[in-house]
Image (cartoon, rainbow, N blue to C red; front, side, top):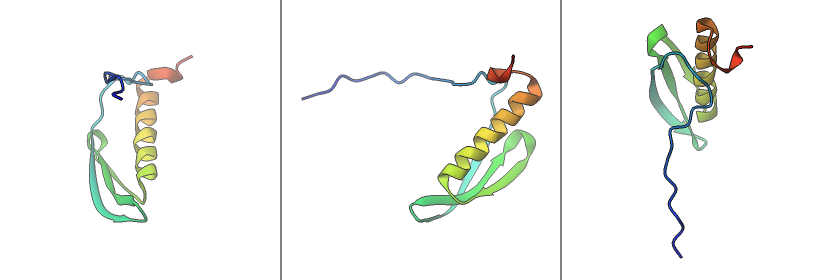
Length: 77
């Protein structure tokens, strides 16, 4: 039985004012997850992470921080 194919859509949960660029360096893989560093290109800020979840949290924090400084996004009242 073939299931219907759903088209992928570009979904954004937050309205960021400016696109941001991150460079990931995966240095190792232990305990079924990644360890490495992430560079926020626009701010030239590099941080290390110990898991894929921690990496995603770092990206989210950077985007929220940038969004609050520019005064945009879903945090506006």
